[in-house]
Length: 87
Image (cartoon, rainbow, N blue to C red; front, side):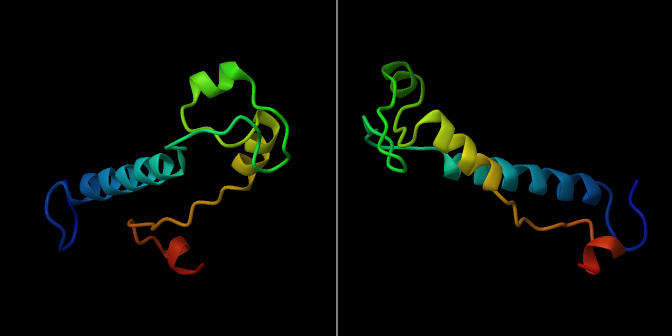
């Protein structure tokens, strides 16, 4: 049930768009192309098992973990709540 001037299903459309944007963002951060044998950040050798598991890998596990903790999503909040508008 929609409220106000919105049509039925508008809220679900906003949720679906937000999820699709997050999936697209995650896929864009995945490695692709030719992988490396040594980490581009620290120079340590990337284990063969990791190179087989993640095609196109460019970093070792510790460096990738550091990069993942720094990832910030700057997506849109399509719900338009007052809280999101105050930021």
